[in-house]
Image (cartoon, rainbow, N blue to C red; front, side, top):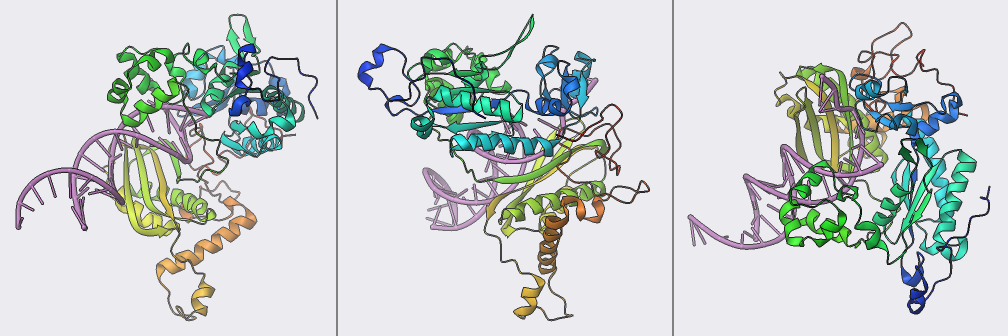
Amino acid sequence: MTPGPVAPHPDDRPTARSRADASAGPRSLGDDGTRAVLHVDMDAFYVSVELRRRPELVGRPVVVGGTGPRGVVAAANYEARRYGVFSAMPSSTARRRCPNAVFLPGDHDLYARVSAQVHEVFQAVTPLVEPLALDEAFLDVTGSLRLLGSARQIAELVRGRIRDELHLDCSVGGGTSKFIAKLASKQAKPRITDRGVEPGDGVVLVPPGEELGFLHRLPVRALWGVGPSTFERLQRVGIRTVGDLAATDVAVLVRTLGQAQGRHLHDLAWARDDRPVEPERALKSIGHEETFAHDRHTHDELVREAVRLADAVSTRLRATGQGARTVTIKVRFTDFQTLTRSHTLPSPVTTAAAILEAVVPMVQAIELTRGVRLFGVSVSGFGEPAEQLSLDDLLARGDAVPGAPVSAAQEWEAASETIDAIRGRFGAASIGPASSLAGSDGRGLRLVRPGAQQWGPDHRPDHRPDAGTEPTPTDPRPPDP
DNA sequence: GGTACTCACCTTAGCTGC
DNA sequence: GACCGCAGCTAAGGTGAG
């Protein structure tokens, strides 16, 4: 469906203008060879997707995330944000701040499916789409201006289609670079005021030449790359706004933040950001980590978790067609101290067995008496895997003879191929290591799949077979329409 | 008193080889 | 042979984002 008529706006000038008449008024994105970059950010995405299948909850505070004592908020709608509930906040804090909120466990697979639909809308506008997360993306629409109209018209087109076809809201920011577009989309968001939730502008564009005026009044914390730690360090040298940052000598920033970050932030403060919109970014690491509902205290317990995690990681790794040389484990103790240990192998590996061979000695070398609340396995250093041969291949080329033993590594490679084929046909939970089996509930055993727990363990005991599969009485989940 | 998961990138330090 | 500077790699920790 096409959106309705769009109100005239100074930015609605699809044709390029010369620098000579720039004094006539603000220039448009795409003028004079500037880029037109949009940042599209879905509004309270996870909650909005849930409200499509739970319309009776519209208008009430709703929170999506981990429901257990160690869970966090993944998303809160604006009604919940009025009570001070925000994403990444511990769920227990959110419950305290907003006891009347409806708490829903997340459904990551559903959000991923809806996200794919949203990205289809983006692709209809430009092939230059860089996904940033399930709920946001950069779009380089410079090449679409002649065909589809001004950046504002394209932004309204995207918003209209997402609203009409997917019944979801989004905010769009635009500028000559990714980072300006990202800051602009934040300005376009709905606002929480004393009177309640007020709709935002929906679209905010920063015309070429007006970047510094837009940037320098913003708090420095608004910059992409300034988190709590950097903010504190900047505050210590008296920097509070982006304007302060721009006025600070780059040598001071390098001393305060280090070479890379110091120079990078100084460039951003002067609106220097020529990073392109990259549709395809090569993955550099793959990992899984899990916070346990109950702490682990023995090496045996952790090795069992490692088997599950290595299996999940290796499956995703093989799907990329690559192998990995570096294996890293992450352990977080009950006191929240976190350590990592890594080991680099002579050549890239692809199987869970090979990953475990590196993981187990690292686990064994760690003192666990404090108790472990989180454990993770990841791989990096991707490269062409060593030749992988199926058992048939091995038999065919004479490396193995029927009935004679082949090496353990060869057996694992052959077995992994078979496992991938079974999962491809029957689903990810159809086969897995025996140590991943949850206990029996009388209906048979079920595999506990890493990655299913996105926002912390929920309130049920570990490894219960019904984990996450049954709607709870307070969470009757009808199917998505 | 409470802090998930995934990924990217940076810094620092130590080691090795030239 | 000892030392220096440099580059490259590895390991570990930290920061930030969404």
